[in-house]
Length: 359
Image 1 (tube, rainbow, N blue to C red):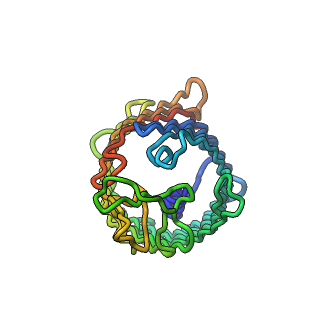
Image 2 (tube, helix red, strand yellow; image 1 turned 90 degrees about the vertical axis):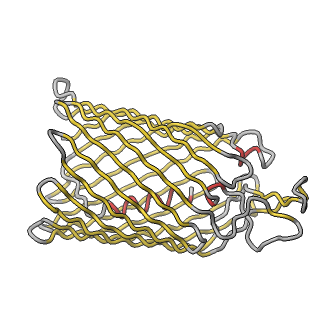
Image 3 (cartoon, one colour; image 1 turned 60 degrees about the vertical axis):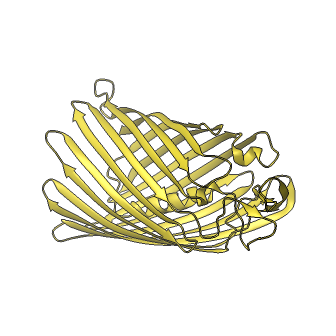
């Protein structure tokens, strides 16, 4: 859940300059499944309401119902893992002429993890509203335990800050440049992940040790994005993201999204490619005669690439209700692991269906 917390914080910071303008209700369910025998069902409900002049209150709830028999689970002598996670978010947007202030609190809990998160954002329209400067800050306090072990208790503290500049280039083009910094201190490993220490000939497992990674982690991410209106009711969005951290991970992400609207139907096509190098301490094999201070069997710290391609359909139904919109999404993904001993590739899909009501 630590990676998901980082993603959530970055997403909240990116939304710092975005004001909520209407009352809305969203209900949807997402199903994740992959070839590594993992399934996650995530129902979500979100509500926002204009509470006073310029002020919008919002709240959401999402649950993750996880069932997994992945290589991580099986390699640690467990046939299957089942888990349930709940997350509650409460937020506030306040519009003051050309200034927008945002704040949110996120509480997440599962049987072995508890997280408290707070986010603040500030956005200022400039240059006759042709440009927007947005700043954001987040903090997260996490308590990690291990099922069946009352003596195991660890903590992880993270914080992050972001800045972005959004510029209208012409009537059809908008560009954005953003930077996010993240810092974390504490327990980053998995309490259930044990690393195989092999014999020098790599022909047998000598013993296993708990995963150990550095306590501190500094993260940097920069994004350049361009939105371009094309012919008719269509638009193309593209962005490139560069990421690096003090663990030696360097990553590149390129994403394209194409939107086309025909009457009450909007179709979004998506393509995303990701590549990262492994952490400096990551090894495909660890041997008993050359143990290092840090050992990990986390595939997210190996060298790998991934590709996501998908389609999303939104359909407004004004003859049913003036504010009703149905949506469905299917994303197919493939991961290729270059130096992860337990798995060479992983395929799967994200399937989502839901409804939006925006008054």
